[in-house]
Length: 490
RNA sequence: GGCGGCAUAGCCAAGUGGUAAGGCAACGGUCUGCAAAACCGUUAUUCUCCGGUUCGAAUCCGGAUGCCGCCUCCA
Image 1 (spheres, rainbow, N blue to C red):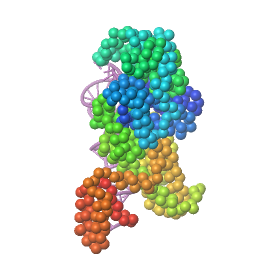
Image 2: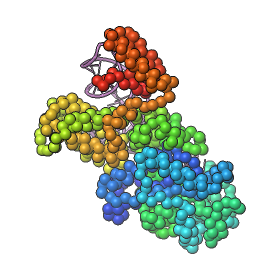
Image 3: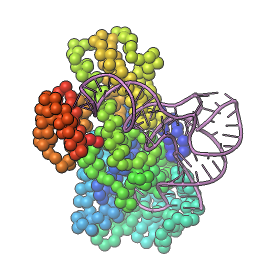
Image 4: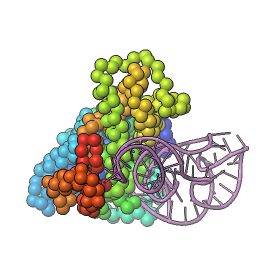
């Protein structure tokens, strides 16, 4: 498989350092508030990567940290009068709740910065012994110019960074670009003892300490959002390699950012939607579909319209799954076997395409996790499958083809964490999405009954009027063999 | 100012040298009292623009324009 490596700026074949085992460290969240959909994108991207690596037979250790001590948490604590630890705990729980609602399983290891103070202190001490760290006033800084490779990840040179950059002047720093490893605490702030006095870790050092603690000095994969390339990952890389003298991570993966009106979704811009807000309006699987329908390295623009589109698209997949299960359900005694069947509705080429579905999806995901292309193949298969379903045969060969395709769709869906729900139930719930309508379901049912009576009396004008009035309120009626059902017009 | 990325149909979006996936929308058809839903079909001679390399380029190279990200906390 190939992955795009930020370090080399191109796709490279990926092989784990130790055969059969792979470690992934993905930067998690700072827990001072509810997470927004951008955080969900990040987590879903790495979740799919992990599922994919596992499908390829690798044993994956996924590490995703919580930054549970930092200026924003302290500020939040001061503003709300809630102890900082409680703030952190609350938003860790909130994050876990959100990810669980999105169907994302926990990572193998979810370390917290405050649980690794000894490792962090040790790491800083090594850096100090090697001359990469120095104490200035109450803080400890990393001596950026002593590390020759500084800038290799983000492609910047130290001297270029100085020009035009907004660098805060700090009289305790030897160089304005040096960054904090250990931050001395002010009175009343949370603090841990250290050789440099009471304080707390800087932002970057925790990730170096925790990733190496769980995955060794050289990681296979390290990832995060593109906004972390500089300074966070550049600094992590510098301090880690300075300390160990070894390559820190073989691959650096960075996903594109979620945007709104083409602008980055972020707390500071205030243009964000929390996961909870989005899940109140759209089912989790729709949100997942939306997030992986674009390549992970592209920017992805959020809007209600885009989510609604994703909902319709997902419904298409589930509708075919439901149809498939209905047909197979009509033949409970059927056993798939080596039967031949020649579909009348498909060309030879189309049969071949259906036959190579799994191979093509695998190939797409092998190529830098191209989920968008993989989904495209799934939709193509569904279109051909729909045509096949029209043949409505009872021959064992025909049923075998349906049986196998159903199995394939479910297996391929599992890699993307899609299509695992009961299709009939999913189709129903996707179509009858409850919203604020200004009319009660009881009233709707009454009108439907009135319309049914009119239709029975062949008074179609009256029946059509009722339907039209409801449509004006956003209620769409559908006459089905099981009677009239209603749904919210999308 | 520096670094990086992106520009493909009405919209979203794959495709990185061999002649434009897929989704949504729209339109046509099947079905229906009429609809809706579902299904089928149609919809880019062309990939921001200008040069160049090549038998051949959306894909590679040079330039222009526009947008975005990072350089400050950020997934």
